Image (cartoon, rainbow, N blue to C red):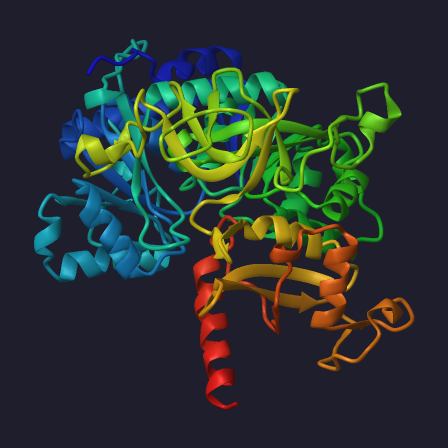
Length: 572
């Protein structure tokens, strides 16, 4: 298969010149200028090739926290035509082992957060990992580990180059740059093969839409094992920005870094925004947020409450939300929620924008914005792939789409239909302005009484009740309806849950009390169609399970709720 000669290391020559005397990376007290960074990538690439034998198509697994060394390694692997496979440092050893068995790495690189994985694999032979021949430590181990570890380090295998660097890159088969693992909300993660071209066109889309430039100081809040963190990092490399690394996101450390380094750009998910706002409420005097000019948010839309809070603490920030997926190399659509540079006061407010349409009851959902410049979208309204105005499966096609799932035969790899269209697994519709509305996940769809119910639509209504702090809607087996709709509810502090079904629901304003009957009445008041209103409500007393990037693990909620309902029924 032919592929474009795009290469993610093509940014190095520009960085080495543009930031010759200024830092391109900052990690703690370590600052590296553009010229030294580019030379370090080239030296490490030569070490990978000559010392470890990494060549075109070889997979290098990485298990580490964010750092400048991590970024240097990602580029060095690509430089020699290798394929980087970042592992999630939050995984258990069993999850990490499964991922490595899937992709068959020749080298495993770890830091102090994951070095025990390497020790486990060195001590016990694994017949499924016979390809793994080298174990490498990222950077320099601490003094407590230096005498304990039996492995080389990335710093010791670097081969210094004589004379100017020619930047002679190599490519892997099919132009694959990385294998990014899906978050695994409904099972074991899959390895998504992402090409150099996909990463570059995604970077260009972010640069054009968000407005990144060489004057940006970018705070790495997202892990480099996730597509959002990697794709935005590469966008910043392409424009020649400065990168500030935290090992991992922690709200207090992020606040300090924003103030210390005068951060101009960062990316978030709703849980990060909530943590930042909670931390800043404790700050009596804090003006660090004035330097922030661009915030890109993914992993689910920001609520009006979070958006207003972010607008307050980052008064000069353009806040853009993105909808996407790993298989599409991150963002498919973008929407500007707030832009303080816009003269129209209504458009500069921290509120979710609306457009002049009146969707039918079955055509509501969440507005997620317009497709990026390189993105082609279509809505397939039935299993025959027919398209017309209406709600249906969201399909996408273009250079951003993955080359396939690693280890699967081509027919299975693309998960796409005729013409190379990738089925996102989401349900939505396009309005007359070219905006995409997200209705829900096809896998989460509830079939109740012959009608399709998407839990996200019901959750969007119930989450607006002032007493609800969290809501997850699921389907439970039902003899007559096939499935009945169940709402798992977390309530806010100072609110009380009651099972008194005789309580007048319209008296909720007089006392902070919630019940299933009150919430059903609220749904009716908000014009939610009758068959979509939950029939059963479960009071949920703990946080809902989330992935490392804040995505809901709906299946875990469903399993626990089903066990709860079975217990209740067995004791009736």
